[in-house]
Structure formats: C-alpha cells, structure tokens
Length: 172
Image 1 (cartoon, rainbow, N blue to C red):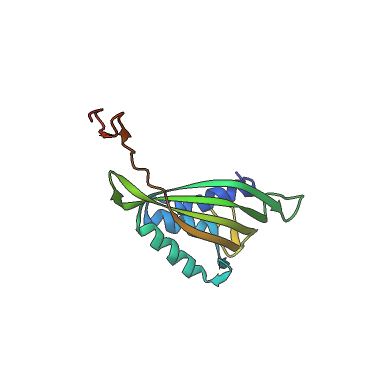
Image 2 (cartoon, helix red, strand yellow; image 1 turned 135 degrees about the vertical axis):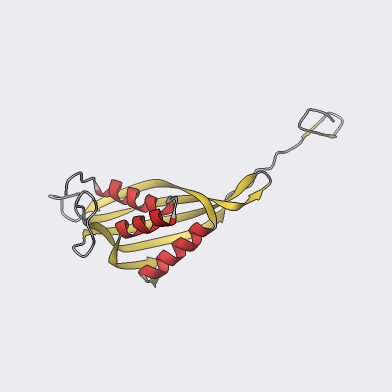
C-alpha cells in the first residue's frame, strides 16, 4: 500500500466523500471505495442491508443541493499496534448539514443529520484496490443517527422609544 494514511484520516475522507458527493457517479464511487461488499450494518440498533443503507443515502442526497460533513471527537483503535494503519476501529461524531432544494425566506432550508459512527476497517481482498493499491474497507458499521431541522433565524425588529417597530431603514 503506497501513499497509505492513518485509519482516522482514511475513515474521515471516505465517509465524508459519500455525504459530500457532488454527483451520482461521485456518490457511487465513494460508497464502493468505503464499504466492503460484505458490509454488516446496524442503524439505530437495527440491522440493515448494504443496499438499504445505500438506498437511504441516495434518498437523502436527492432532497439536497449540497452537503457538508463535520467530524468531532474522532478516535481510532488499531487492530495491530505493529501495523496501526492497516485495520482497526474508528469511532466519532459526524454532523452532516444538507442545504435543501426549497427555501425559507431567502436562504435554503437546512437539515442536520447527527451521527455517531463506529466503523471496523479491515483489508478486504474481495474489494477492488484504489489507485494506491489500498484494499481497506469498512466491514462493520454501527451508526446512531437522528435528523434535526437547522434553526431558522428571523430578524427581530427593534422597538423605538415610543414602542413602535423600527423597519430595516431605521424608520418607525
């Protein structure tokens, strides 16, 4: 494996690429590059198939015009201390912010998906290697996730001394 990166960086890059994909092709490429063909997945403590999690991600993408992923409190536990970058577990919090197609006032509505991710990464001989010969894939994925609407901030009119609302131009 040339140009190998540590497990944390690998997991963050690959999972973020799925959520931040700009096109359908980018999404499918990122999904295949991250997940083993034999992926075992649990979402909110219910086992789901690889295809089900992929379908869910596709549906979530369809409603958005753009997405960004922000990681917090990420940690890695290598399987082998002698080869810490080859396999292990990466866990952390991920906040995916999606800008939706419809607008609230002048800006796009936003949806936050808050996830805790626990991913077991291994060398997967069944997976096609990337351009660097890397066979690492997520083989077990445990996610707890919830959607939350981003807060909407409306401007608050100021009250004048006489108790009337002041408009944006400072006129009462």
